Image (cartoon, rainbow, N blue to C red; front, side):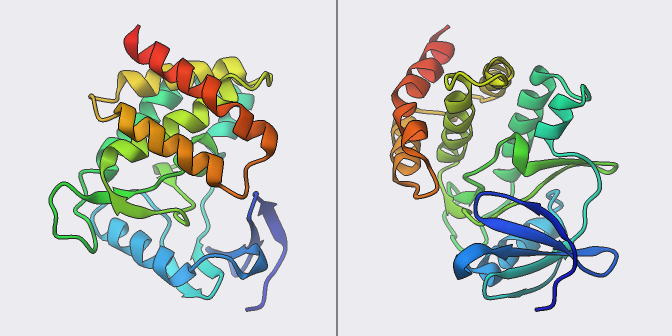
Length: 221
């Protein structure tokens, strides 16, 4: 598929300009299943969940609506968003997501899970926050989704980076909006998945134990 100017790059994908209202997200190395990801996004869009519109999906290429506005992570640096607002927004987005019926499962306890919802995967558009990057999406118990977001934030919080304090405040606000969905079993599974993620550096994996301790401390506090 023909691409235009490179707009941005993440750990596993690049985003290219297309014609006006659309962009091409291409997974590197042919990874991923863009058609499956598009099906999830279309299902969520049909139920009113804030995701980009999808035009086409083939192989590792996903053509989707071009969004304007910063990511939540960029908004921190621009002074447009507080950590508490970010955490509460993530919590609202998780609750709204888990209110949508599953696409494949008939089990009422099963929901669509994002499994990578963090401040760099939420864009603050003029129409409100929109959630991007559904490449890790599965169907399952909502508690795992809460746990994955919590572990991702906690890893940054304990990692010694300049944004660590902001990440911890965001995590606290997320947990305040958790409504008891997050469980010990969910945290253990989230840690296992993060440790097995080939995109994680050894240094990031080493932070998982400390991240788990921080989450449990905040939950009990």
